[in-house]
Length: 146
Image (cartoon, rainbow, N blue to C red):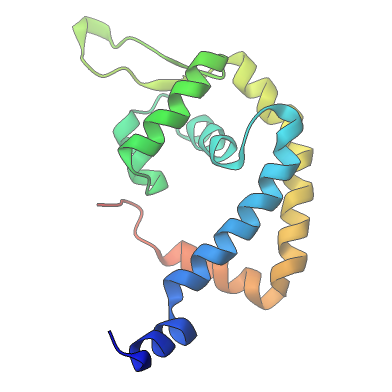
């Protein structure tokens, strides 16, 4: 690979820029969530599971555009902490939908002010135009991943 290609990638790579932004924002939310024993990806999953109700792992992965191994790792911790549980389907169904437990709902309730603090920090960092750009791009992404 030539020096011109390296310069082009260094100057123009959208992946590098978006991953840097994601790491900075994740750090802000993780910092605020730390006192509650949860990280930002787990908090996001709790919100998603709460919103969707009994939901399959496959649907969570599609909605969150998340790889199966990452999702499984986060769900295992959340199951072991008692924040979510798997429920048995009637008539011997193979699927075991995930639901929020009362402990998970309580955690969401207690951690929401921390989320709001991180959200305010993120908005200050991105500015109004940046917030609008991120929201517009995210809202245009397909609802279901690969």
